[in-house]
Amino acid sequence: MFRLLGAVALFGAAFAANAFTPEGMSDTDQTALQINSSGFICSEIVSMNQGLSDTVWNVRCIEFHDGSGRAHFAVDTSSGMVMRTY
Image (cartoon, rainbow, N blue to C red):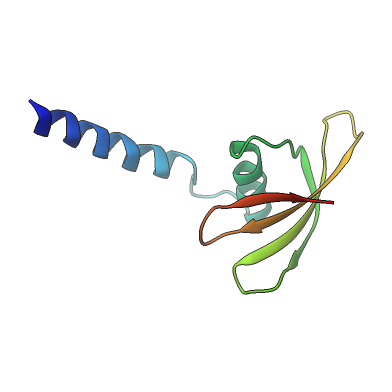
C-alpha cells in the first residue's frame, strides 16, 4: 500500500513539474509564470537582463494588470528561486 502511495506521489510531482513549463511559451512568459508561482505578482515583464551568473536574471515587471506598480526580481532559472529586489 505504501509503495503505491509513493508511486502516485512521485507521478503527481512529475506531472505538476511538466504542467508549469508548457511547450510553446516564450521565455518571458515562463519567467512571469515562475515569479507568479512563487507568490509574487508580475503581470507583464518590462525587461530581463543577465545577472551575476549565467542562470540569474534581473527582471523588471509591471506589477498589476491596470499598469500600476513596478517590481524588480532576481530569478535563478536553474534552481527556480525568485527573490524580490528593491
